[in-house]
Length: 246
Image (cartoon, rainbow, N blue to C red):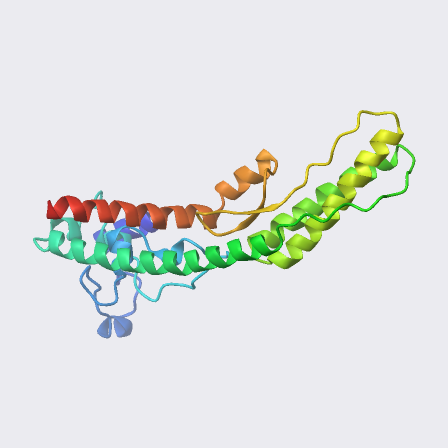
């Protein structure tokens, strides 16, 4: 949609839908206008990466206009400018500084998260539970499943204490499940203690050794992908700076 709009602007002018009165005050935006987002011109704008996540940094107050940088448009204004290389270096440096600030703030949260996890590292011993009929086993398993979903949700929004409290309930239910299995002459399955883990990429709290579906959901989530792009860009930028100075 943005590319189609940009091509129409290219052919008919960005003021094509304005009235005669509106055209009097209209100012054409060019790639070097102060209203244009330098981050967007360099590669991507961080404001676009985390929309509707807990890391949302709000909308960008600068212009994101595809026609200013898209190579497959007829004019490709920025690409053809003799000032392209100098300004691209400037835009990339500004984006690198913004990304580094984001990562510094995130890494502080990650350090605090590690400390909070370390404080709650001791597992709660499961209390002895009374026996129930064998059909209760499925009810206990359903409770465990629902609690793990809640833990995942709390971890994503950084509510570690609440998530840790729910994990203690999960441990208790796992102990009850093992007891039911044992008293129903089934193979005793030692409950696997589930702990919280911290994603080093995006700082989200997760269930350690969680099921593959939820792990995949996290990896493909907007926040994880966004911080991955930010970290990758910083690495790429530093490498290019080193190669430039050699």
